[in-house]
Length: 342
Ligand SMILES: NC(=O)C1=CN([C@@H]2O[C@H](COP(=O)(O)OP(=O)(O)OC[C@H]3O[C@@H](n4cnc5c(N)ncnc54)[C@H](O)[C@@H]3O)[C@@H](O)[C@H]2O)C=CC1
Ligand SMILES: Nc1nc(=O)c2c([nH]1)NC[C@@H]1CN(c3ccc(C(=O)N[C@@H](CCC(=O)O)C(=O)O)cc3)C=[N+]21
Image (cartoon, rainbow, N blue to C red):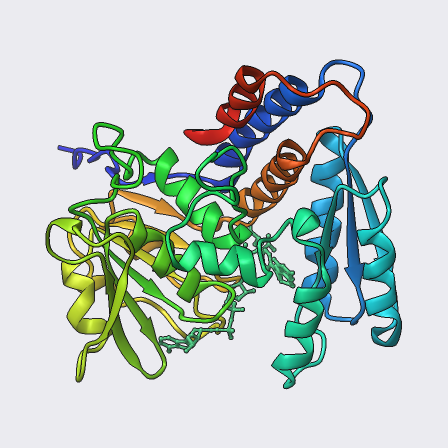
C-alpha cells in the first residue's frame, strides 16, 4: 500500500500578502485624510553612496510608491552636498517625507547621526531622529500629549515586523492596546541600533518577554512581572546563549547578515513562529517547515508598505495650512483615529 501523504502543517506566509493588505489600508487612509482632489504625496530619497543594497532597496521603493499613487523622487547627491540637499527638502512644501540611505560615512557613526538629526521632525519618514527614537524607547506613542492626535513615527523594519506579527494574530486583540503581546516569549537575533534593538524594545513595550541575542550574548527586554512597568527594562543574561532561549520562544526572528548563520532547527519549539528579516536566509527552509507552525521567509515588501504608511502618517500629523478654517476637533480626532488601531 502507498504511504499516506501527511499534509504539511507549517503555513508559509509571503511578505507580499501582508504588504498588499497594508498598502490597501494606506491608500484608503490617504483618501480619507486628503479628500478626492489631493495631489500625490512626494517622498524625497537621498542616495549618496554606491551601496548596491541601498540602490536595490531604492528601486523597489520607487516601484511600490508609483504603483500606489505616491511620487518617489530619488536624489543622488555627493556626501559633501547631502546636508544642503536635506535642508532644501526640509524647506520645500512639495516634499512630504525625506528618506536618507545609510550607512554613509562607514565607520563614522556620529557623522551619520548628524545627518539623521538634520532631517526635519515633520518629514522624518523612517523615525530615525532623536525625538522619534526617544518616544519609541520610552513607550510614548504620541508627539502631542495630552491631546494625543499626532502619532510618533516608528522605524520601518521594526514596525514591519510588528505589522507582520499583527497579521499572524500573535498580537491578541482580546487584550488592551499596548499589552497585546503579554504572555508571549520572542527571540530576536540581531541587536543593531537600526533593527534589532528598537525591535526588542517595541515588542517588550507591547508586553512580550524578549530575548535579544547578538554576537556578544543575550539580554532580556521586559516590562516585568504582570507587565506592571510602563516601559521595558533591559537585563544581561550572563552566560546565556542562543541555545538557551530558542526552546523557550513562541516566536523567533532572525536578522543575522551572513550566509553561514542558520538557526538550529532542532532547538526550536514545536510549532514556533519563525520570521526572517535578514537578506540572508537565517532558517534552513525545508527543515523549518517540518517544525514551525508559521514561517515568514522575508519581510522586505512589508518594510516598504510601512514606509508609505509612515508617509501618510506624517501628512496626517501636519498642521493645517495657514489661512484655512480651524479644523473641527471631531474631524481632527477622526483623522488621527483613522490610524490608531490599524
Ligand atoms: N528586510 C528589511 O526590511 C531590512 C533588512 N535588512 C537586513 O537585515 C540584516 C541586518 O542588518 P543590520 O541590522 O543593519 O546589520 P548589522 O551588521 O548592523 O547588525 C547585525 C547584528 O547581528 C548580530 N550577529 C551577527 N552574527 C551573529 C551571530 N552569529 N549570532 C548572533 N548574532 C549575530 C550582530 O551582533 C548585530 O547585532 C541585513 O541582512 C540587512 O540587509 C536591513 C534593513 C531592512
Ligand atoms: N535609511 C535606510 N533605510 C533602510 O531601510 C535601508 C537603508 N537605509 N540602507 C540600505 C538598507 C538595505 N535594506 C534592505 C531592505 C530590504 C531587504 C530585503 O531583504 N528584501 C527582500 C529580499 C531580497 C530579495 O528579494 O532579493 C525581501 O525581504 O523580500 C534587504 C535590505 C534597507 N536599507
